[in-house]
Amino acid sequence: MVLIGIGEAFQYNWEILLNNERYQEIEKEIEGKEEYRWIVPFLQKMSLEQYPDETLERAYETLREVIEGKNYFILSIAMDDLVYRHGLREDRIVTPCGGFRKMQCDHNCSGVISAFDEQSYQIVRSYYNKEISLQELPPEPTCGQCGQKRRFNQLGVSKYAEEGYLPQWQIYTKWLQGTVNKNTCVVELGAGMQFPGIIRWPFEKIVSYNQKSFLYRIHPALYQLGESVGERGTGIKQKPDIFLANGFVK
Ligand SMILES: [Zn+2]
Image (spheres, rainbow, N blue to C red):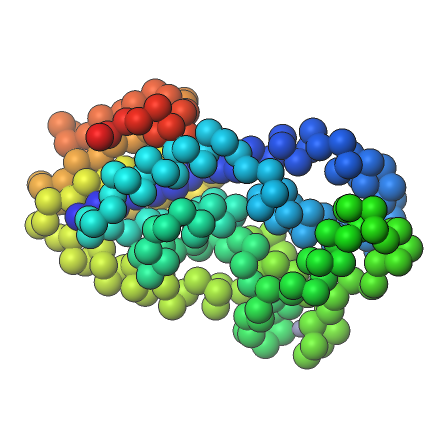
């Protein structure tokens, strides 16, 4: 069995967007205009789709090749949705921090997760492509129930709707129970101290209990292993995307 933890150091390189000329132009145009800030997450989504992070793309390809056909589960705290775009099994992925795939009410007034807002996305794209002006953008989309802002279902909104990932989290914990006393390869890709309670600490615990497990902790700085892991692990000091892009485990 293979357990993969994807952390904050295995994420889309947002410099790609920040260095984009048109995006810089837009940032200037909406500076100080709070009513237009809502378009930024839509531009982020556009960047993810339109301007791939080549190293990370290659890394995901390697990851898929290496774990394909195995009994795996991927826990990712990245919010870039890239884990869903490389032919990996969606029923074996959980992303507890959310991403850009679904929407929610900013205050989560009703616990309802809604579908991605394609219409707003297309309008923001038209603006990005200079087909319409800033003034032609519609007002910020709102929650149909309470009138608050409608936002992406991801950590950082006023009240994060955990309903978006909890059903899959239950499947994950059940899968984890199945690793007890089974040969289990545990791999951490860039999981640092942003949310150590989601990946690092629980993964160490799994390895300290399961005598048939082994941990690969790949991180450019925080590659050290906790004592409880003992001999059943190795820390690899490298950027995980480069490590995988170069071919690794095969
Ligand atoms: Zn609402």
